[in-house]
Image 1 (cartoon, one colour):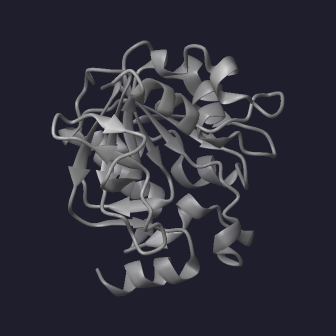
Image 2 (cartoon, rainbow, N blue to C red):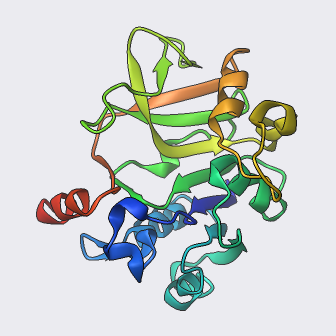
Length: 228
């Protein structure tokens, strides 16, 4: 995979007051900004071009990360405006910068020891999602992973989507009729598109059993930093 997308446009409302002056992906976790962990992993797996979606305190990202050359990457920024466009709208907004081949997308507000390089460069369907055990704050899970490596919207044992996946551009085909966007520019979630693809066995998955944290609150960030 040559291209990657990092979602960094969230408002970080649950992280306040920490995010009043610093966007969540730039908060320090275990000695470096959250987003820096992702950039290191992406560079290690051979990614060359990274697009970072921005909105809240957008100007701080190029100030902190520059053009990506310190990681051997080329970073470009896709500004979403003052209101984030959600995951689906964020991909659509950045799509012209992501090239024709499958790309890896990573949420900027997670921390994990997962090896990004173990993800398939060519998923069999339109997406491949990395799943994790359900954390205490999300016990209901998201999708079910069957014995054939396919994900389903329902099942007896649901896992949580880690915020890491490999996507084909074709996932967004027909998005206006599926996602029901709220505004212009279109703001919509990725989940309805994934559910539609799952109904035709178009989404595969794998289960990461190592460390993973959704750094969604100051308390979770403190716990992450307390246990290196």
